[in-house]
Length: 435
Image (cartoon, rainbow, N blue to C red):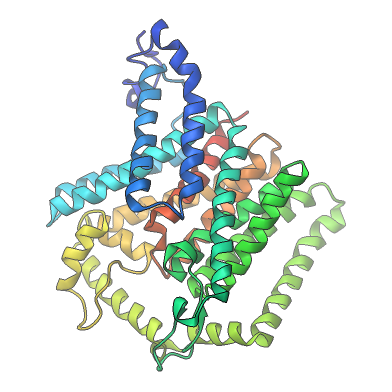
């Protein structure tokens, strides 16, 4: 069976193996895809890098098989897919022109493998949106286990916790949990996009056990994020949950009278801001950690990041239009040429700077277009009541949280965080296609 002549030319390869012999396989593919994605989301914070790599590769391979066995569906490309394809094209060009092409090729391959997971999620949710609940349940179960393990570290010996040992830091001595992830900042980054989705599960799911899963994940996750003492994670979490609350208020206000529809959002926002200010003033550990943000170079972590950012800006100035190529391998080879003495780094510690370093200003603009398009799609769901309209609001909040955290850290590029980001984008893209 040949593909539909009306299908986009990018999908001309789909359906090449479609026949009566593969009809049974096509019926099984949604279950296979759903089961594999559930397994991936469940073990994200616990699996080894090798295990995650195999699962990610298997997802991409399954998407390829699904495409070959199924004729393409005639539908618009969509803003998210369009920006993603543009970024991939820029990344391919950056790889070809990279001063370290072999290292950049590794980064490009990693990017394509993540896109395989996104493509499989998107295809599954477009054809069977009921799988969203199951994917979220797997994600929340893995997050709950991770948060509980992290909270139990509070009862471990002090030496088993991550400490601020630098006496020059205003946060010296702060004890931080890290759970199975080995890094408090990574733990917080992992939690940032999940917690707004947990709120959606709590609102959306019926039955005692599903609600208990969502509530337990939300409560334990909030406690773990707080006790990670990750300043970037707190910023991302505040933006994620704050934007979700605002979106839900705007959605609910259309069901209220004209007066309350206008008054309720600003009243609630004011109450939340007052509560946060009081917590920052009265709770000593929070006050100390937040004070460190304002210490400038007087805080060791701030000083380290500032020096890395300055070096990253020099890298961008040297190759502003095409970058050095994607991936941390290319960064690790080029960064030593620009680093300040004593400030080695594995990344630019800022997602916008990292994107500009890897793929130049065009890559950064493409990523910005992807972000803005994602938020626009989320806002479009405020007035809709379809299968994925409420999940799309949670996904938009997750994207906002990731963007906020990404300004001051590059935790997003770790698979434990990035896969959840692709889940959010797949949710937004699939919600757009539903009618």
